Every structure is written in structure tokens, then in C-alpha cells.
Image (cartoon, rainbow, N blue to C red; front, side, top):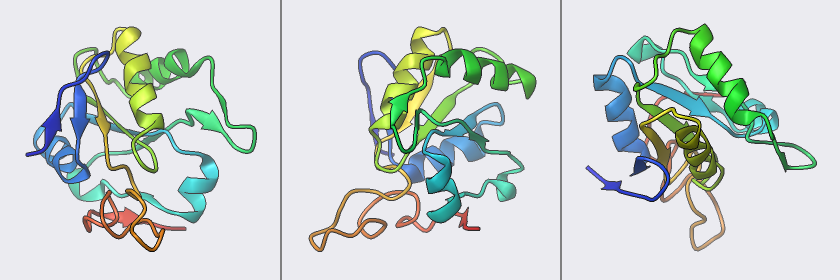
Length: 148
């Protein structure tokens, strides 16, 4: 299992380990903080086999890429609406682990812990040919996902 502790949030997990956490912890929740365009055109994790629903909330909105100043309050309301309790593991996902790290820190600061970051994200880092989804991330790990 790949896990790295961090300051300000519970720590970083690789996508495969995050999926394992989601599979074995019934209270855990996955939150995708990418943009709506990314969800639509790149795809999104599919948690149907785990009997779970994925939550979607943009950390930054395209095209301005301004951070949502009300992100923590909006996500807290979403979590409460689907009966996620404080203390449940929150797992955050973005393209490559940067926005999701900020989201995990924000939710930890708002009292929602433990909050984890998927450090390799949905698409992972660029490979030597400057392509994503090849050497890391949710898609490269062949974890379940869908595309519209």
C-alpha cells in the first residue's frame, strides 16, 4: 500500500490504494473536484461495483479557474445531504493530485477528517511523450471508469 502522511490533511494515496479504501470502508466517500468539462470529456470513476455514488464538486471552475471560495461549505452541505458523517474518510480526486490536495486540506480545516488526496489523480503524470493516463492514475491502473 502506498501512503504518505502530509501536513494539513490525512495524506496521499495512490489511486489503487484509494479504491481499496473505498471498497473496504463502507462510510468512505470519493469526491471528484475536477471541472465539469473534465467529467464530461475525460471520464469519471465508476463506483457502481462498490455500491457507492461519486460526488462531484469543482474546486476551480473553467475557464476562469478561480477557486470556489465556498467549496468547503458547499461540500459539507452535499455530504450531509447524503448522510456522510464527520469522521468518515473523504477521498479527493482531480487530474493529477494538485487540486484534490487543496480540497483535502480545505475540508480538514473545516472539520472533515480524515481527508485523503489521490496523489496520482484520474489521469496521472505526463509520460516521456507528454501523454497522460499511461504511467499513473485511476485510468492507467485500470480502475473502473466511464465516459459520456
